[in-house]
Image (cartoon, rainbow, N blue to C red; front, side, top):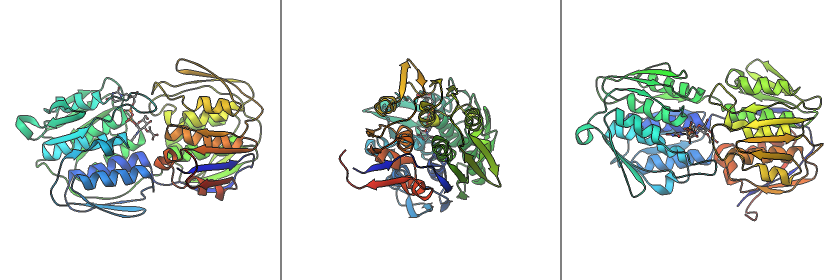
Length: 427
Ligand code: EPU
């Protein structure tokens, strides 16, 4: 297994180019199931989750050609609407094929994803929504089996109110409703920019969707049960941009231009960064982050968009670990997303956990150590900790990072970090 070795303490200077958004690319790749013909998706990030999704689409009977940063998905041979456990367990977002498959083929058999490092992550909201659209759902041997009305017929539009806001739940039901007969109203939807992006793509395919990116979405199903192929370039990854903004903020003396970071999608992070004393400035379509003085402590509470993103919580915690005073970080989205805390403590951070709250007392500096993480964003936070720390840090189990950050060590090396990937390091 690869590891990343960092010798910390060097300010970052230069420009980092942001890749396409993982969490936009995944549902959009799944949306190709709603049509035949060849759909072309551009600005795809080179990530392990993308490869897994391509494999999944092939298993489902699609022809997938990859020529990064582009992927073309076309009609293949026989469609087998079945997502096997081996692929779903690698990536929970595989559940995003459920809505498109049952809407298009009247039937789907998709493995239940099971728990993961950050929480139990049920999919009850996805299933309740599909049931409201006339699906019959049963669970059998770890699989969800969904069938359209009257033994595989077309889904019916419905009024659906989510009990909690869910990103992939909203996306799954949008894709299902895009082919359903009649009108669907989704209420209490998640409002992430990636949902808005999926809405744009579905509309390009000929769907009629209004309100994606707000908490109420209206979808008018088409006359016939099929949509057209599309050509689309994916928006930049706001979480990747946010991660590099925090990396720049973490080391005093840094000035990094983040190319392709959309400030409008990162407002809460920007407000919080500015409150720490870091300068954040929009320049043309880029963002410049400048750290010139010691950090002030700031509290954060994660929330659905436009609140502070849970996917930035671990990285922000590293920042607060060397701030001048006490800060409080509360995680409200996932029940187990403090897995990075024990590792940061090993690097000298002072953090006390009380339920879903972490109380930090800023320290002078962190110290390099061998660390490892169990999820993507926690791994990224440990890389940032390595950039701050004196001495050498080795972040193990880098495959988590490779799921969601394209060439992280190369992008950080370009701005002056002393960082290398060690191939086949000890696990
Ligand atoms: N939830 C339920 N029932 C459901 C669905 C969700 O109880 O049917 C709960 C979850 O357990 C969680 C909360 O609702 O406590 C929110 O989960 P959500 O469904 O919004 O998360 P997700 O759709 O599985 C996406 C991103 C995550 C990101 C979350 C929150 C994708 C592919 N994944 O996950 O991204 O953390 O939204 O913003 O879009 C990452 O990229 O590292 C990542 C984990």
